[in-house]
Image (cartoon, rainbow, N blue to C red; front, side, top):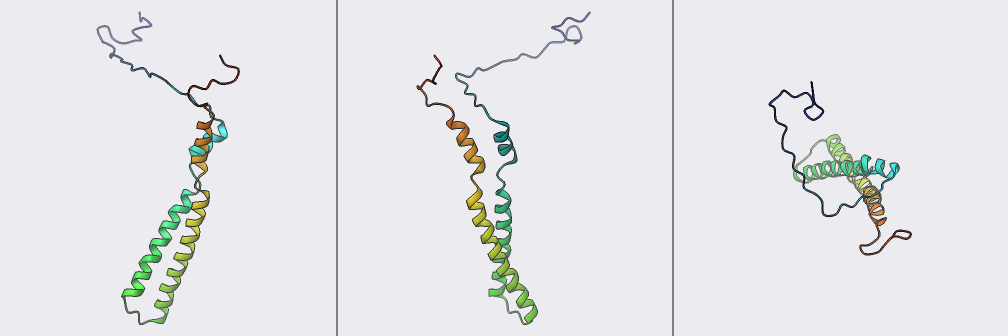
Length: 127
């Protein structure tokens, strides 16, 4: 017969010792489903930053190649210049978009934290 405490272990097997350290204070924040989705997905602007870094890196590499090498073909020179200009323009544009939209996750977390009244201030209706 299996006892509920033993849970099917063989006789003579020992359960591991479980030790628990308690928190002195635990603060619980209530989060809506919409806020949880924003935190889960992360900032949509991080994609802007990734592409911006990529494009600016490519543009800088091509600019260095333009400044340090002697390109005799007009076609190759125009391709290098085009890639450099496009990289800088779109890289800077995406960097500006990232700067304007990067605060969605941090703003959500701040609004959740602001719901908690300051320490020592009691909520209305609570004793």
